Every structure is written in C-alpha cells, then in structure tokens.
Image 1 (spheres, rainbow, N blue to C red):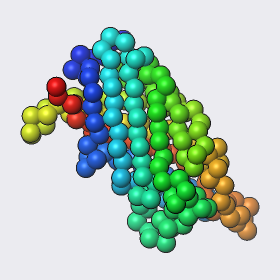
Image 2 (image 1 turned 30 degrees about the vertical axis):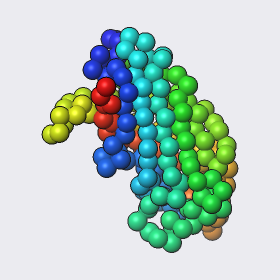
Image 3 (image 1 turned 90 degrees about the vertical axis):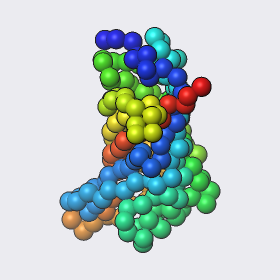
Image 4 (image 1 turned 180 degrees about the horizontal axis):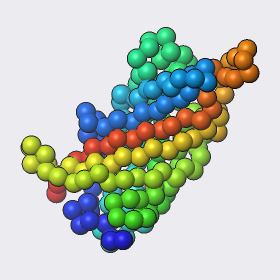
Length: 184
C-alpha cells in the first residue's frame, strides 16, 4: 500500500455534470428499478500522507430524485419516502477515511436521510487522475453500498399476494464521482 497519491492531495469539488449518485431497488420481487438524484454537490479534502485526515461531504437535494417515471418520482418525494417538504437534503459526512489498498479506500461516515443519521462504511475506488481538455486536474471515484432503507425511516410497503413485497428493503447506493481539483 502507498500513501495517497500526491496529485490527489488538496481540495476537490464534484462536477455535477459528470457525477451520478443513484440507487437500485427490487420491484415486486422480480425486477430492479434504478434511479438517480439530479442535484448533487460534494467536496473532498485529501490529506497527503495521512488519509485519516481526509474528508468527504455529499449533499443531495432529495426532490431531484429521478426514476424516469413521474408518478413514482412524486411518490418518492412524498411523506411515504423522502418527505422532501420537511427534509429537503440527504447528507453524507465522512468521519474516517482509510486506505485499504492501492486506489481503494474505506470511507466511514454519517448518512442522514429524513433527519435520521446512521453510520455507513462505503468502499471507494479511485478510478484515475488526469487533466481534462480545459487543463483542470480531474479525479474519478466509484462506490456501491447496500443499505436497508428502513434504518432511515423509509417504511412504506405493500405486501404482495404471493408473500413478497412491492419494494425491497435493501437498496443499492451507487456513486460515480468526477471531482475537479480546486487550484490555489
């Protein structure tokens, strides 16, 4: 294992046009429904030589949920799920960042949804660092983490006649992050 690459050291901001924070859930026990949040902000602080002093903050506007189905999206915005009128933001704040192997990190932090905060550990992979066409230093990161939506009070459910449920309790969170280094 190596310390964090020196080119990663410093402050980074998410490029919202090239960042995706999404999710998938089982529908009716047989298919997956995928969605994303279209309004996401984030920043990363990377401490060279000491990853434990690094940090990640992600802020999601819950009303920006998009599953490509307007009726379902409105239901997700309602009090049955995200209750965006009362809880407009979903926030993740890291508490620790550990390098577990080259280009792989475990980011542990507090995920707040509907004013309920739970600690989650997210395995994060660095997918590369390059200068873009405008000369800015850009870094890519990817992560997937499975969570139980009920841990955050997302309780709505419909039982199926077959014994299953309409929406799975387990949700896969998906992060595809493009971050641009803040130059001094």
